[in-house]
Image 1 (cartoon, helix red, strand yellow):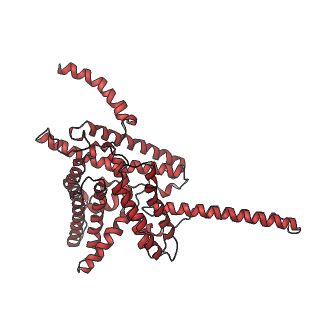
Image 2 (tube, helix red, strand yellow):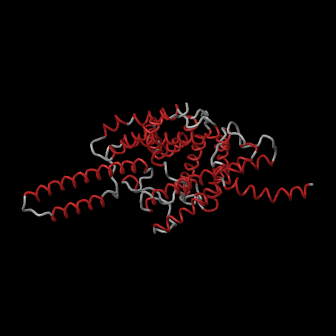
Image 3 (cartoon, helix red, strand yellow):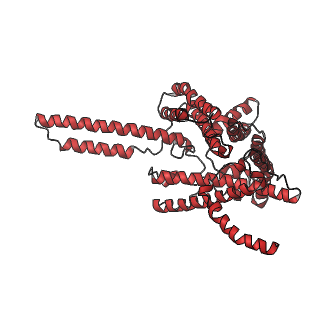
Length: 433
């Protein structure tokens, strides 16, 4: 059913529960309480994912898909916070400076008050209560902010569990203004790329409708059909990577500019994935690691336990369990929306795990890792050949027909296409009669 004003609290409720669970995850002796409280955000998110849509129009299905992805992330984060036995510690506490400033003000006011008369002592007690009240308010605000930060810290760069996270090298200036300027440039470029691909998709034959579409163009046959199929497949990969980067850049700008966070907390999420010369480097170093911790929690560690129970290497179960969780995490949001469950998506990720497993066997047998030109060709053959299945799965359910960039703010459709039409239509009429 569609959302109404009365159902808005249902959308907010799982998020608030997740924030409270993040608050408990930072406190000692709360493990049992977290286990008891975790079903609230988990089942609340599933209820929102299955029971409500932001819009019944299939053109706006992408926003419903974003809602389902968010619900899936809340479920994974809730499980992560609930099963931890030790409290999460932050490396750099934001509230230290505020608390130090309050303590200095308190000490200054206390020392500035005369100690002789009873009137001065009453005034001193009154001001001490005011300082204590402001200190409590600042502490409450800090706790709320810390809980929100922890709930949103998918990579955990500022927390003890994320100190070994793989981070791409920073190429932007560490100075705040220059950092924001370069990030804004990258955001604009990414938005233009996403908008251009989206506009081209809307012009293609198979993406005119969000109800049904497929990678092969139905009205074409032979080499042209295969060429457009490959073109759509690789444009889908570019679209996904650029969309992630653009949304991340927007969040970076807001966090650094509005929330006054340090640029160091927002390093790049991609590390030239298409230049990596093996599947291991592509998925472990080049591709974004935003959901790595979550997939390890719900898939990798259980897979490792199962593999050891079966007498296999734990690393094998960790590998296949993580990629299986990744496949399910990419497909379940579609299932939540009633678009059906397509096993091609989990199978694609399991095939990637198989490729990484073969790379490990190669290194164990030969004594050297795969790499160089041969490794680059191998990795991109696996990604390209099997990537067609996941692209076909998404486009067969109308992914290319979903509204990604509204036409009213699309530079391609409002500026580029009219200019090209102005110059190309007369030329076409002239040469084609």
